[in-house]
Image (tube, rainbow, N blue to C red; front, side, top):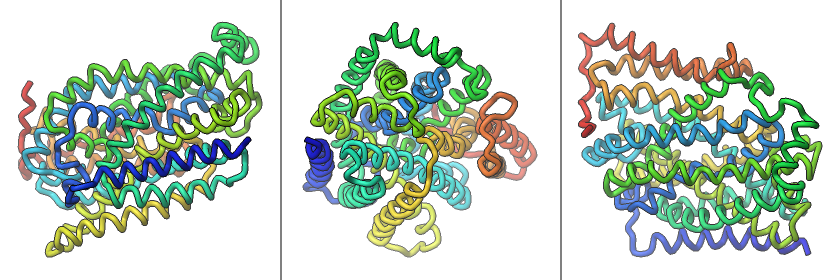
Length: 479
């Protein structure tokens, strides 16, 4: 009975929408409440919002798809999160303190306040919105594939994406960060159960994990090692560094930091999040098992879903698909809300200084719908893999890292001109590499080269302009 999966998936979407409606009950959602929850979230909600970056459709489908199609290089996904959480222990508390002190709403606000430069805020907002689109596209592409496969082809991918984007836009417009936080609780409970079941059952179906790895090594010698498609040790190290350093530079992740009620939350989370990420191994096991269960797939994003469809009964396919849908809804809602906040607070508000708070909030909600439409159009006209889309976005947002790092820990070494120049040069290099379809240069990730040049430019320009410009206000790191 193939109706069961699609019924379960749409029921899950409706439950998420109901959670969004209930979460805003008795709350007056001004911009601060809508975007950062009044800065009152405790350990659980902050943990789940930040953990939302681990279990997305990128992980659910992209991670398993890369294990299926790329092999050994997939382990970078496991490594970069550990790097990010290590940095979060030192990086997030001073960011939170500064945001709390100055009542910041968005990521660009951090740059505007540090350098007294609305123009720098505009630049950061523009880059942030551009970076969010491919990431959001990866979530919606994955969601469309999940619904298409779970319906056994009854619903085309574009229809599934259209329905999801419509519900997601309503969800974000109505509830803001509160709906996302409550849905994150449901998502993580369901996704953990599903990942464990799939990651254990599929390898068993393939004859056991040991036998599976022996089979893959015999059929595809070298597939389980670094070096596939030019992705050797330099690529691995540079990609882990790029994505690890850029992890909290995403505008929605940066903004999620503002929601915490105290800074101790980040240090507690930094202790447990690396352990939580080990569950990703089961996603990889499922992708490797799919090589044996459904060989020869042209679209590697379908690896996990195709193996699940062939192995489990229809109702269980629906449960797994429902978990996959939630992995798109939680980060997707954060990204859409963040895009609305960036445009309203850092593009609209600076140029319409007399705009009321209600007008700014209205602009943010309108932008949510515009982003939904743009993402939908990109999603139905792109064949890029989910991992490729995510890495494209990472290349952009990681260009914020040099300036953020220096303003927190060495503020005398960075000026407004240096920060602006570094971000511009880094982004221009990323655009060049993207247009020329270069992802690896001299064995390393091209985004990493852009990041290095960015850091060098920030330091050199800051030295040249230090006497002419005031350094940013020093942040008390408390260390």
